[in-house]
Image 1 (spheres, one colour):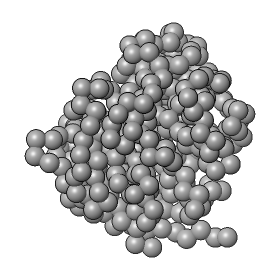
Image 2 (cartoon, rainbow, N blue to C red; image 1 turned 45 degrees about the vertical axis):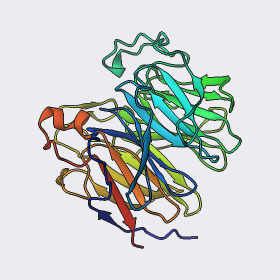
Image 3 (cartoon, rainbow, N blue to C red; image 1 turned 60 degrees about the vertical axis):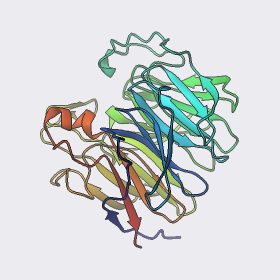
Image 4 (spheres, one colour; image 1 turned 90 degrees about the vertical axis):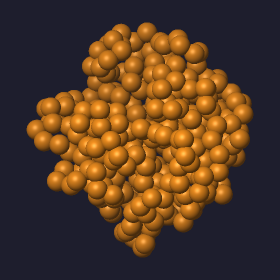
Amino acid sequence: MEVQKPTYRVIEGWEQLPAGYHHLDTVGVSVDSQDRVYILTRSEPRVLVYERDGSFITSWGEGTFTNRTHGLTIGPDDSIFCVDDGDHTVRKFSPEGKLLMMIGHVGIASDTGYDGKTTASISRSGGPFNRPTNVAIAPNGELYVADGYGNCQVHRFTAMGQLIQSWGEPGTGPGQFHLPHGIAVDPEGRVWVTDRENDRIQIFSPNGEFLDQWTDVQRPTQVRIDAKRGTVYVSENWWRTGDVSFVHGPIGEHQYGRVSIFDLGGKVLARWGGAGTDPAKPGNFSAAHDMCVDSHGDLYVAEVTWTHAVQFGLVAADCHTFQKFARTA
């Protein structure tokens, strides 16, 4: 069956951020069973909760996270998983913010040779965790964690947080990684990993057997799968002039953040942003870091605008850090 090509319009001013609240970066976003939107922020690390129309509900997690929060995923029971690469942990919360489980040991990183600065310094694989990035939930409840900035592995856990297996090593070959950044599990149990600095998505069996890779992506940060619509959503970060891809080498000109939507076979259905656009214009992207889709097909995109652009003077300080796109077809 041919999948319909989606179209969207940006909803400017969607997020009704209360007075006194700020975020320079939004690092994670997901929706619960009621289409409430949960956003994980970094500069003042907390979880913000909104109704679908952008009205603010509540916040929680203040004082819990470091300023290197990274990923947010909501489970089928509406439990909230937050990944903090600053203290090497994955935490599970109730929708109200009560801590239910933690995987990892606060402040303790596995030994991978990582110098604390560049993924190129990682000389070997390590166990959980060294700056993990995102978590995905399998249909059977198992957890898969991308680990991440200071490691080069995917870790598989039981629903209760017991380690089952790990796979991956530094490199560009099948099953190797340079920054496994985003992760998703499809209804068949296949594990999709955005291998960010290798400009690809790798697809694995539930036990880590390499199956396939997609290379028509640009510094991919997260992948989300909408099985009902037969679509795969990918957020893609900004390659700045002078950056170096492990696959494509030095970057000669700015390739701004973008979003791509594929069918399950890898055909591009929609794509916007990227080189030649204005990253600060509403509807375009500076540094797309995560995205999710609600039950209506509307798209929410979180951006790490300060980390990748504002602090370098590449966009103004008031550039968008979170956008909603309403599906129009």
